[in-house]
Length: 483
Image 1 (cartoon, rainbow, N blue to C red):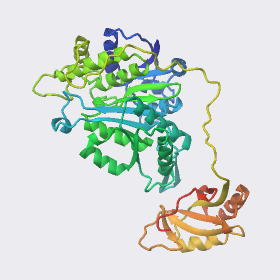
Image 2 (image 1 turned 120 degrees about the vertical axis):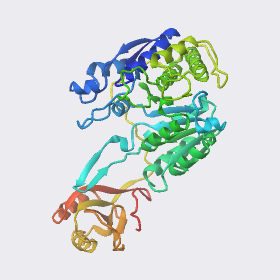
Image 3 (image 1 turned 135 degrees about the vertical axis):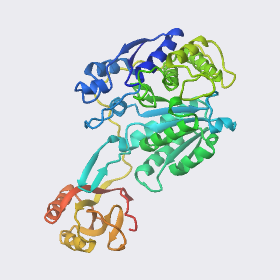
Image 4 (image 1 turned 180 degrees about the vertical axis):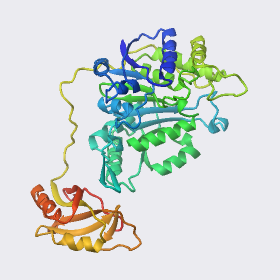
């Protein structure tokens, strides 16, 4: 079996070589095809951070094992790590955080075991990176949460929880504030949960989740979250078990998957052979399990756990009264311990079995669309206009453009209502959201909205606009604070 390998930037080549040396010593039945990705590829003029040959190889093989990669700063290019995940639709980012004996933390010293799996949606949310300056003072980032994308990652979380015999799946969210976007994710969570009655399904507001994770982390099992919140919470969880040096990551897709360490390139120690390779080794173990190489995975993980228990450590962790080993020596210690089992949390060694099949070739992009549950109607429009005038002045001008199909119902600024009611103590910026709705909720056409746009543009610069939709009797738009 052949996989693609990208060694990465900074400490990437050192920790990848260490990991592959362990695989070689355990006779892992894999071949490696090195691909060109990372900062030096950006520097050669490839704006997506990978050569066309690398892209083709990864798509043919269906699996990428990668070291940490740097995205050049100040060159207007996107993160190679995010680009890779999104390009190949690796929709589920799985990160497993477990107590490791030999890695002292507040919780390990208190005898509190941690075993948390975070499943983070990996494609959508603010990671679309769709941003605009609407005025010289106001920036906008568009946050996409979709029903098919949410269902896809949530279903993966439940399936994974079922396989690992988890007891609980919890959805972290902020639906109390972002009622439509996070509200949709939460709705999908409970829809999917109906198919898994054997698992306890509950939800928790993400700020409350963060507090509880640092006070009672052993209460949680599997967490599923949207992209940005999942990114933050997973790094928090890394801190519970010793830091990013112990945080593996699997990016799972239907056709292509990526396995990598969570941490960065650590350029300050690159080339010194002192980096901690544990996170990448754990990511490699996760990859072996994904491929069905369960026996190799069990043996290597037990050797790693035995090595940590024995007190072997790199300079970033462990007993400071004992000498630290370098990257190569750490890998060699694991190799010498192959076949040994740790005292705590030994892993089963199961005969290799068929794993995830090789990808089949796609002829066109997959389209994910759910069935509409009601008739769709346009019932208004939000016009985002640039102005430094007072709300009453804006309202007077806007009402002239309402015509016979629209009525002005609300003006807000930074999400807070300033007309028809408001407070003089609300500070304003030079971007207003002017909301027009149809008279008597009568359906409108896009031509009606464009007519209003043209008329209103006689008085204002319109920076952006959003249709107000309804499906059946359900409003598909939020109200302003105070409305």
